[in-house]
Length: 438
Image (tube, rainbow, N blue to C red; front, side, top):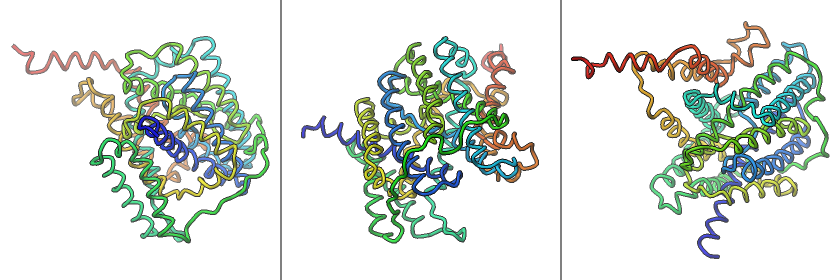
């Protein structure tokens, strides 16, 4: 096997593990929230592998055409879990909640398709300004780092840390970081793959009693989380969340285009990317999945590995489809220890912080204009860290929105960009600077 072929093969496998590690936890957590059986969760997981693989390939070939992972939206994931946990307070069954969510997602999908077909998405881009994109990237970085840091810690049933597994996760973070930082280019490029393989092998040897068991999937069913209904409150919340989810497309495509040094993303790329996102949103609830969107976090992966070619990405998507089509393969890979996957992704997403910093290059900040960035980012991060029970005094339908730091932060950024004339403030500060005094 010659070097280019070997590089493509290893890069494709690395993409497979990256996509898999991002996706595998979502159906498990949602299935548990909807009180599904292990076999039903395995079925949804199998559907997610096939759906995700196809979604990545279609976007890479016909949508935005960049190697950006397409997967379950983190915004919608958190929103769905919050709604499930609020079922008793809302006086609804889990199935009613799931049915309302399905309706909201499908309506949002139809709306997104309309935006694409009638060329209305430029209106969205007027709202999602470069500064809003920067806020989005900062909040996404914090949200993902919080999730993966918590996920790499092993918590026992009594609420205390399993020190051995937790220390192993920390050691794995250090190992992958060193491979990335000091390893030669060919080694550094495959740091994620090396980390997962070494971490999984070491975990299997050291913690044999903790190994996950393979579960056979049940038969496919439509709308396993609940048949679509007209629970207006749930529909409205889900619909609004899905609209915010559209910012993923604008931010991910724009940020990735900079990485590839593309000066302008074509109208066609945006049009077909939104069209596919809308189709995914309509289709996903039928299989028990949530709305999909491009992952801006893929930028961290691309920068970490420095492998920018699209071919390995497409092959990785195809391999994900194979995992779903052949159940035993998906079930086998699903035994990847959650702490190992989270530890490796923790390192991969550290790069996203650099992308966030680069996005604010050129913006002048002083004692006034710093609020443009500080208010939405820091308020969003504060909300991410508070206990959801603190917000129980709020109206129940507002809790999933107000309690989501990501949503609140992006909304505040949009509001500040529309209400405050930042260019005028920047101009005043320049004219008042000591260098301009006679």
